[in-house]
Structure formats: C-alpha cells, structure tokens
Length: 248
Image 1 (cartoon, helix red, strand yellow):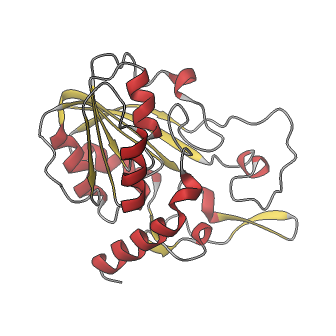
Image 2 (image 1 turned 180 degrees about the vertical axis):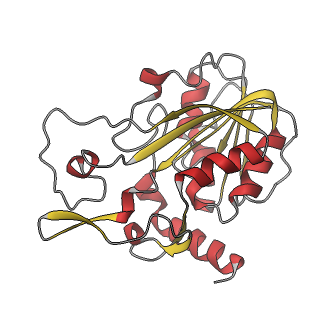
C-alpha cells in the first residue's frame, strides 16, 4: 500500500468512527489500564506553558491543559470531524487556540523552537514515518522541552484469546504496516518493537527520562477475557506504555 492510500484509508475510518472516541483516551488518562497523570505527574507544572497535542482528537486533553493553566493551546489531527469537535469544545477558552487538520508526519506550519510541552495520548502509533514525526516534534519544542506520549504496548495485540487461553498469534519482532484488527481491518497501523520507539527518540534529539508500562487493574475483574483491553489480558501483558523524553 502506498503512503497516500494508507493516510486516506485511516482518515476515512476515523471520520466514520470519530464520535465513538469523543472524550476518550484523553488526559488525565494516558490509555487503557494504565496510571493517570494525577498519579504520575509527568507534565509537572502546566501553568503558563505553551502546549501542542499530536493527534488532539476531540480536544478534551487540550481542555485539561487549559484548566491547569496552559498559556496557549495548539493541536493537530488527521480527522476533519475531530478538528471540528475540538474547535467547538475549545471555543470559549480564555487562551489562544490553534488547531490544524494534518497528518503528524507533515508540518502544517507550526512554529519551531516554540513549545514547552508536546504530548500525544494514544495517537503516535498511527504514524507511517516515526522518525519524521519525532523529528518534527523535536523541531517544534524549545531546548529542554518535554515530549510525553502513550500508545498501545507493542506486545499487546500479539496475544489473542482463543479456546479459553491466551496465545501468541503474531510476531513481536516483525515490524511493518498491518491492517488493524481492533478496527475491523478498516485502518492501518504499524507494528513496531518497543526498542524502535526508544531508539528513534534518541536518534531525533531526545533524552529518555521515564518509561512506564505499569498496569492498573480494577478491584473486581469481571469483564470478557476476549475483550480487546481486558483486565485478564492486562494481568499477563500491559495494554499501554508511556514515555517521557526531553529535547537535548
């Protein structure tokens, strides 16, 4: 599949599914069955900071940033519907808001050496060019600026529930684009090893400060073990990983 075909396929899939994700996978949450920002305090003091959300979705993470004192809110997202929703959600914020409909691999005209914090909650794995995306983010950030992102742990969808047990049905070490099973094969994401994310950060000018793949389980585990993000599965492998890095 060509890159433009992948982007178009993913955009069409998101336009159809966007409403299902409004308000989900947004700060202070970093992802399924993972610690929250109010437990981790990765962002630190947000007051008077200029922030950029990569894959801003419906704008709820940006609203969280505004509530906590951010000076400027910037975001980009591939989906027209998501940008429209974020625009509506943030229209009454007392700080400047700038939103761009764009793939994260492309620079829609964002300022360089400008942002104190760039973050991405459950979106980075959609990029078809991780190095270009991380290079862009490095350019956007001030020196010593913070980049925090979360994504589905790359071992999570390698494990499937079948005949009352979990089994490995896909290779963890084989990297590349795949039709996404969780999206009923209507979208393409990339399988990358965990080391690929970390090494690419280092190659693009970041120092890794913290890696989190802790699991937070509910008090009572009663959900369907075949569910995509089930607590039973999370007892074996983490659903989410979180990385905090600093621009060198």
